[in-house]
Image 1 (tube, rainbow, N blue to C red):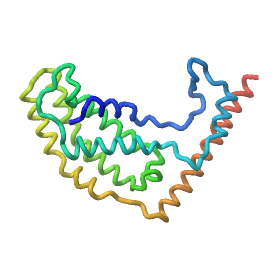
Image 2 (cartoon, rainbow, N blue to C red):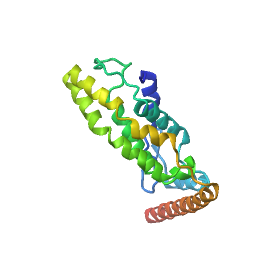
Image 3 (spheres, helix red, strand yellow):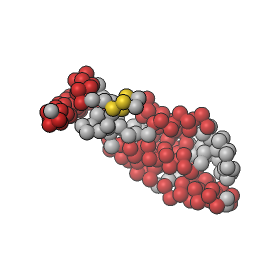
Image 4 (cartoon, rainbow, N blue to C red):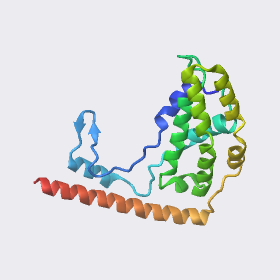
Length: 206
């Protein structure tokens, strides 16, 4: 059962993880960064370091394991304002966060696990979507029996996911190094492209 504190810790972990994109508004407090400031930030950016946040990854994977794989949810209908019971909206948030994580190009480099393994986990998690929708419908309608039935189905749906999590597909060291070299080159090119575009924008404004 996820506590209010657990949900609060998870909320900042949604995976909207773009590298600095040219033309995107950057804000320092209420002051918009100038083009020169954006360029300086890009010059300081080290392409050897991924912006994939391993800590966020670990938190999301822990929640997936404890909530989905272990089925640790209450089958009692949550009451309004009851912070000690996991609601369907929180489950949807976890599913969305994982799917967003899959889109990050540095996932394999940072985790050392095969993308195909994460995709398999994603497919296993997709089987929960209809169940979570049923839980939300029951919650919104105050239907305790329907909620109990859906929550029980949720807890019994964990077989494939549980097995996948037991068998992570690790990337051999030699292949992992090749992936890292390729990603560094990609990040370097992305930074250079962003600097060129910003410089062009700066010249156009003169």
